[in-house]
Length: 299
Ligand SMILES: NC(=O)c1ccc[n+]([C@@H]2O[C@H](COP(=O)([O-])OP(=O)(O)OC[C@H]3O[C@@H](n4cnc5c(N)ncnc54)[C@H](OP(=O)(O)O)[C@@H]3O)[C@@H](O)[C@H]2O)c1
Image (cartoon, rainbow, N blue to C red; front, top):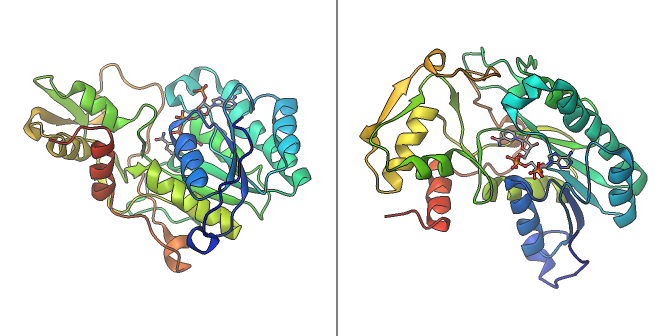
């Protein structure tokens, strides 16, 4: 956990200052939630897996009730989608039961929970973007465990469903493509569609929901959508490489095939934000440019 510190800033600029506990603080989203809240002047208790293990009720209770936060952002999860197929019990334990422990401890502490979930709760067969009120129908062990987690939170909590997450810290498509950019040819699937979403923007939206303690489910992604093939072309071009080196393939051409099925349509209509008059995240291309600049990968 990070030491308790209060940074004095103009409250009007940043909204109400809070004491925020972040689970999964070592992950790509957790890292940026910690950064955004710290920069806003919040007192942040950053818990990595060693200090708060979602698979261990006592560890969760101790970390949360011991630090008495105003808000818990549950950014921790077992996110190894293909590995979840082989060990669904581990997925249930961390992604579903772990949320029960977080909810219970937060209730005791009087803390609002912002729980992070996923597009994988949907089967991806809908021809148009998914709204918050569409029926989930996960097709993978990971997706089923994350839906289980959604069902563990209290109605007053905020659930943030996001998709195709990229950040400066951790593994994601932008970093994969930059690492492969010198290869003569690349192949990426052109039959899975989604909205690349950048943790720097997502973390700001999460803090906004936390400050307002808004209840219910919110789809929160950067605006715009594309396929993985289209996204890879844009990453290559923005980083000064030849986008023509990437070839579109179908998911059923992947060799070896992935253990877990992916939704063909992962596009989330941010309907609750949009219809509620709340700010939407910028277009993913703008956010991609910022991330590439941060990574020093612009030409
Ligand atoms: N990545 C995506 O494309 C994507 C898409 C939609 C939704 N989401 C959701 O967004 C959230 C953040 O994902 P992310 O991309 O930041 O994933 P990530 O980089 O894998 O971060 C998840 C963090 O959770 C930690 N964790 C794993 N097991 C834990 C446990 N038992 N107790 C406590 N912490 C544990 C991991 O720690 P270790 O590294 O030590 O294992 C890691 O630091 C998750 O809820 C995920 O389901 C992600």
